[in-house]
Length: 101
Image 1: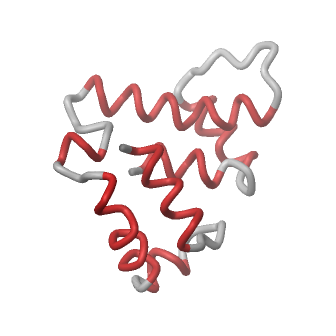
Image 2: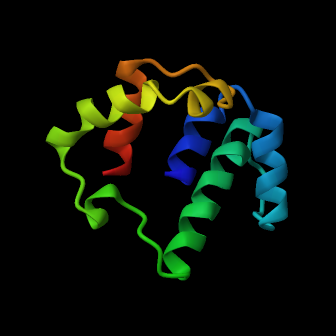
């Protein structure tokens, strides 16, 4: 889920995501800060694939019909919500999970 959460949070943590892009040596010439921030999540997604970890929820058996329940249960895990820089809602979390399918 990390690259998808990074993409979700890039809106509010643009500077941090740009620095992550730089750490991955992403060529940001000609990119806006927003584009460079989003490139960080793509770099992490690529890394996960390169080391053989799942990059999609479907790869670990998650289905579309599972999303509402996963989102609901996730919202009840205080440390996940409290530590995230952007406050998710049921709807936004479901959208995030669908992107990861």
